Image 1: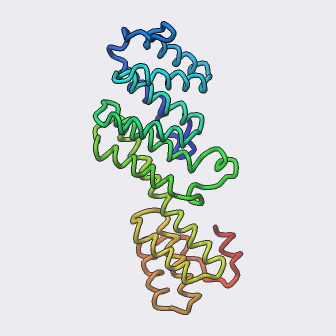
Image 2: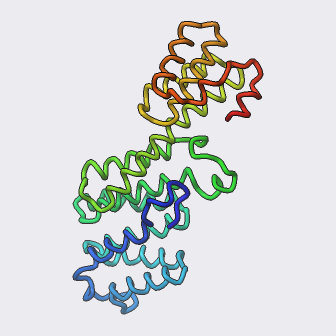
Length: 272
């Protein structure tokens, strides 16, 4: 399962999912018979897996839905739910995938795979903002609506708080850090938008909000410059000097220190 960002350090979720499969399948090989078609539920599960391996995701999802009901009350039913959600996630059917995951967590709060459920819930929202069309348009996640990112962060946070030793926790922590940086960049992107349109007070306020909400992030450097530039345009020289002093203290080699507060916005656009 490829990721748009950050790619190199992260392990595909599908590989991690294999452990959940092994965990939940124990003791399911001799499940009860399916009275409708004579197939055992274990055979139905194998058929679903074969369809998924062959790329027939729609058919596999249908089989997992049937299996979930017919194996109700067993570990195999839980497994069917998780695999169903994972396939829907791969098909970019976010709403359906989330519905399945949320149903799983509601019905099985003590399942041995609930940590993976939170992880998958986070992945679904995490990749929603990146997505196919974001990549095609070369649009950064920080320029998109951030609710999905916030939802992903909450799922990953729940995972690492409740299951700090989970095998999915290290990857979740990496993604949480990326999301925080993205959310901060989003605030600075909005501040930049206001500045370029002459809404200097709104730009200064948005940049200040980014600094208050997200500490120690790379976007803080540009946020401080935007504050100084905005206050300069507003004739608020004391606040301008304060922002510039903080920028110089925290980023003594910042290229932003070489910028002047130009009247023409295209100068800033070239820098950005």
